[in-house]
View 1 (tube, each protein chain N blue to C red):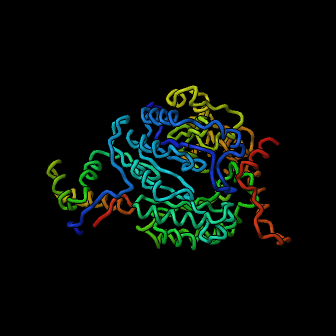
View 2 (cartoon, each protein chain N blue to C red):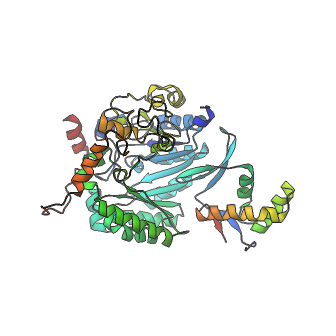
Length: 90
Length: 377
């Protein structure tokens, strides 16, 4: 996998914390996705500066989990959102 | 059911019934001309948006009619934006110009859904009822792209354009759409009135479904394509709005608050108005919103059917329009005791035509004059 790729939240998607439901949410033109904490953290790090590799490093530190255990899950999540056009990978 | 689960997610604001186009499949109610002079004021819409945000709504769809007819649209978009709401505008596009687009982008609009009628100018103008409307829409699309506003294109599909579906898809891709909704006509309002001219034939639907499915592969990752077959041709009803008054509400131009934009045609219910109540009270306590919540109200065959948790018995408006009972099973369902009513319409449309003289469609266009004539008769 190309871990030096840089993911960015696309312009049509907006990430916010929904106060009414106390849940993070990703909003896009035709709908929305409520997120769990991990997904929220990944998306917060998709800021157009960090590489996927950096995101894996940061989150594995934060959760004290081995990099190898997290890498695939993070990639799967990013690629799924990429397919739906919510993330651009450059 | 916990209250938290029932917080609404999105609000459709039908800002006005005025529209420069005359599409014969408009989802607005036939009698819209009755309420033209009762449009909510800017202050009233601002209150609606504030109340919506407090109620837990996350997304606002500005629609109409044509929302750009309202001079206060930028103010309303800014209000939504400042409240943290994600804002969408559904437009016909013909009123877009550079100055206006700049203004609404700066106000914080998140995305635009623009409707086109067809990929060929002459047909598109025939369906919209307005000459040169196609040309103006294309100019609008170019401006939207120039301003980098996320764009989805919506094409209402019917008997007279369904055979061009591949051409329409390629055209939308060339226009730079990120998402293309090939919206098969839903038969409410003006579309119901024009159903005989609009409902496609079975072979057309099958061919179009195949072409759309191929195109989905072709444009994967570039443009998302949505195509759902017309519900008259499916075995089970659509899960309308994911259930009555579950996640969605509409405030119409005159302040009427509806669980669904077509619900006004359910004559057996009376709907509350934002001028005399709050959005919150309407959502939780009004009779109209509580009437068909959940699935307990459903009669047989839905009552004992496991699909009721998938499609909630289908569309309440369609049930009412066919059976005069809004709690009935949607007649689209093959198990509905009224399904023969749908079959009859489908059979008529698919019957071999001896007389092929007039190929030109004869629509009743959505105009104030026609609305007055129809709702007063």
